[in-house]
Image (tube, rainbow, N blue to C red; front, side, top):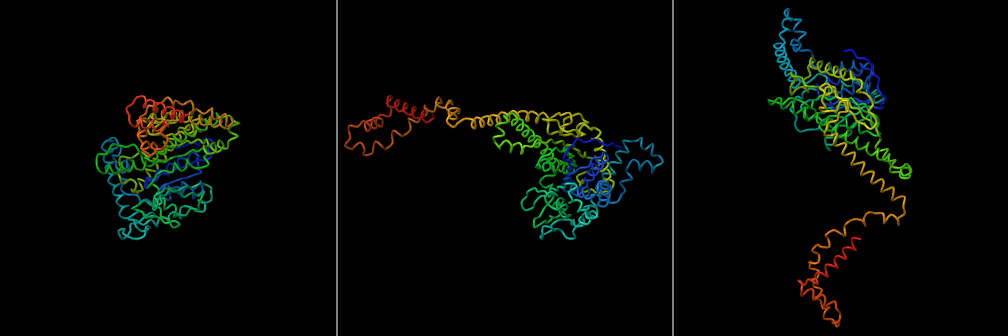
Length: 526
């Protein structure tokens, strides 16, 4: 499919975000080729697991060589062509003199083709389990047991080091031409972490660490710490990229190789496949919704600060700090989501046959071209609408679906929540800012009468009617103390105490105590 060049708004950040997904990573390569076809080159690539490996090839080569090198990399780590090709319609028709007639029998051909592809796909997956993949990983001779963390696994990933060095220039990766961020999991702490060219110099081991998925692959040691696949915690770098400081307007292409939507499973194998889809896709939806909510809060605070008089803002450094922290950046997230094929199973992430790889690649290329056929999806979000998303599959179905389409159709749940939250934040923050302004502009003497505390209805509350007069305070042992026996019998205090103690049911005495308690409580409230 031919594509024309597109004109992009002036986004400081153009980010390509790549999930983990093993063999499904060739879909990401197809997406990138679609971007190149339209003249779009990301200046920031962030990936996890297989996405990190694709980042290495992209950032480690000159822009005009990147697609070619991606092809070389994937042809290296995938199995050579197999008998699957014989089940493809084009091959079937060319090999059979009656190919045209057979093509007319589409139901039967589709059924046979699907059965053949499923069978050979499972065989390719079994090949990866038993023999590994050339240039990627190989099975260990002995079953993993006790030993070092970097050897406790079913497979040895050392061949990947030489493959990355062959197809990626690490001096170029660290040159700053393209920012690279890799998500990993610290094995000892369980914390999510990132290796970023803005902070450190990346080596092949950093990329290897991002793809060290246990128990198949071993932990990777870097500077005395051991790391596993970043997908153990989060399978998308979206939160990291959009949360970077300082915040800048960002166009992000979020490539998901796991689809949250799928059919209900009817057997154990389908359950396994569906479980993987949900586990590795759910984080993207969560992050997207969280970022949307946070962006709404930021915008509400910025709008509130704008309503504060300029003199007040200039006199208080807090306002400058808040504006700097909020940074009204606008985010446009373009989602590209791989949709499952009927012939794939639970093994799709480790099925590395060449035919399947090319199928994934072409699907990614098609989805990217289809997305960019709606060039309005690349527009800079309007003021006040600082977070928008676009998913071509959702757009095509004319449904709000999982993500928002370009027509700004928010999901009803989050739209209601955002409106309610914005009103609440505006009310609370504006009230606090007004109170703070009044406090600073008036004297301390004048500020006290202005406080709302004296006007509170606390004295009218039923607290004086509480059973405090019935408390044992009048019956305290004070009357029994030797004080009444002192030579001051004429004083009324002992007589009063004895009268109260001797007649606890006396109404006048109880009323007197209640009145006294009421006066005390009123003074305390004031």
